[in-house]
Amino acid sequence: MQTKPDVEQMLMQSLKELVLVIPLEKITIKEITDKAQVIRPTFYNHFQDKYEVIERIIKDEILQPIRPLLKNDMIDESMILIFTNLQKEKEFYTKLAKTTGQNSFEEIVRKCVEELLLEFMISKTGEKVVKDKWLTPSMIAKYYAQSMTFVVMNWIQSGMPLSPKEIAEVYDYIITRSMQDIIDELKE
Image 1 (tube, rainbow, N blue to C red):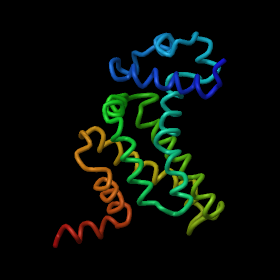
Image 2 (image 1 turned 90 degrees about the vertical axis):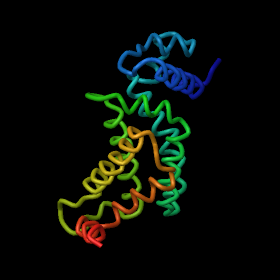
Image 3 (image 1 turned 60 degrees about the vertical axis):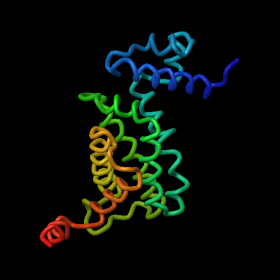
Image 4 (image 1 turned 135 degrees about the horizontal axis):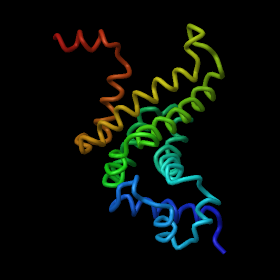
């Protein structure tokens, strides 16, 4: 008898393989379960829908590996690892990045990153408000998740032309400077 994680891994792998040949929107649960060689009800014992499978892939394969780095305040290394893991499955993530509308890949990525950032911030600072009632850990996590997702999506959609280290440096450059700083640097 298979254990629960084995079935989930099989379903995740099945979806990953199908995305390479069929647009995500057109993939059915039946196709996923057929490829994974499980019956349809088994899918629903583990996942609500195919978008939850994508969410799980992002959390397990992209975000989970950076948790130890974040715990040790290795932010730059975390960013490089995120981009490295995305690049390892370039074709898969490039195809997913084409998914738009409700349940878009971008929306799923933003949600997953926001959850991780909020958890990280609260673990480091508690629920403290920074300077203003509006600047809660939740709002800050949303802001950084949005900016991170923007960089990830544009990097994927442009064909990943920069190395993981280079794109991590671009992201670091953008988030560590004000718009005025960047304008001043461009004038020079």
